[in-house]
Amino acid sequence: MIARLIICLIFLGFLSNPLPAQEGGGPPKKEQSLKSKRKQRKEDKKRWKEERRKKRAEQKKIKDHHKRIQTKEVRKRMKRNKKVAQRNHDHKREPFFQRLFKKKGKRKSIKQPQEKTNKI
Image (cartoon, rainbow, N blue to C red; front, side):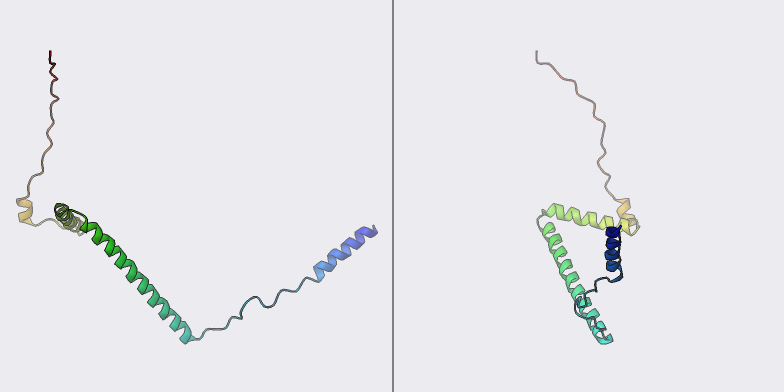
């Protein structure tokens, strides 16, 4: 009984007298002035523009290298396909004369299987 009483008193002592929190948890935060906030935003914007410029330049280098390693015929075909894709994206039809004189695509004909001949 006395042991319980002592344990309860010790437990209540810890609850009633908690440890003090640490005071110096880092540098004190000071309010930024309006000019310094504006200056920080301006620097962030400048940094963002520089990163975007570098990223776009890198993408352009990759694209140019991809085009450069293609053969001349492939580059021409890529150019034609890009124009057609852009036209389709803009939902425009081909001009009348292009549609009129357009080459018909090679039609696939159904081939009959050939009979195998025995060499006897």
